[in-house]
Amino acid sequence: MNKVNAKIQRLAEIDRVIHEPARLMIVALLAAVEEADFQYLHQTTGLTKGNLSAHLSKLEEAGYVAIAKSFRGKYPLTICRLTERGKEVLDNYRRVMKAAL
Amino acid sequence: MNDSSPRFLDESPDAIADRLMQKAHNQDGLPEIAIGLTFLVVAGLQWLQVAYQPGSPEYKLAWWGYMLLIPAVILGSQWAIKMVRRKYLIERVGYVEYKPVNRKRFWAVIGIAFVVACAMAFAIAARRLPPRSWLLAITGIGGGVLAIQSGRLPRFVVGGVLMAATGLFLVLIRVSLEVGFMILFGAMGLLSLVSGCVVFLLFMRKPVEAGE
Image (cartoon, rainbow over all chains, first blue to last red; front, side, top):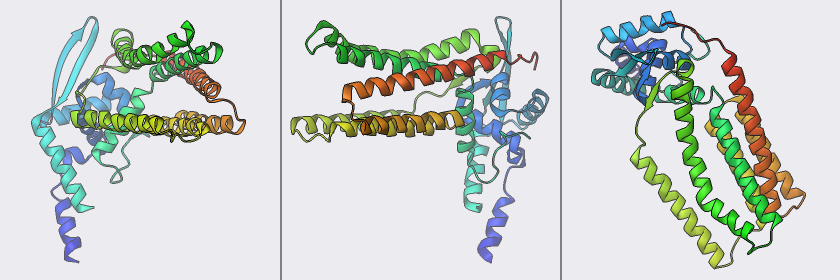
């Protein structure tokens, strides 16, 4: 019983910003690459552009994702990259989930 | 959420990323076109060895082709896919910069390839080769499993099953190893090329959404 309680207590440590499924997808993808643009994330996650934009803003506000806007010819590039803080939070998320489940 | 949402609590973040990236990698059909062309090159070289006598210039050309052309096609196709996507398809597929190759994994693959090559050289020297038909069956089944594992999409499963079945069928009808390889790679190359072209055309027909 105590083991179960300890597991449940560990789940309370989970970072709620990246526990949300769509944001977890974004963070997991960005952790697997150096950087990616908005269109790649849109294509890969299948999220609508509005939804993706809102989630990226939340992740940027939390300091987990760095966003840089530029152009490649006429093509607007919104490059997203996981910050060091984002990497730490994802590592911690992995550990907590592994221990709790 | 849509069908690409993570299977929550079932998958680790790494598995989610792996699955989504694999799906994105195969969405435009270019990797299948590259695999199809590579297989057709192999089938063409095999045809040279079936049609011409050992020692003839064409037969020797096939060996040079295996040694030089196939590694160039395999490595060059990855570069070509990246270049085509960056230059012509960026508005559709987006921009991504992958992490550099994991050195541990790279050396592990090189190590395994070295061990396999040594084992084959030893088997040839000691004349302890398995029956030649086994090579055909192993290639068919191995290629099929690899296709299913690396593609993870229904069309790759169909292709993988067909490759394994073709390998076994060729063993059963007792064709020679050379002819068997030629048919196996030719058929699979054609299938992969056609499938890739269809996926590419369907992908290009999708309208590009403007703005972010």
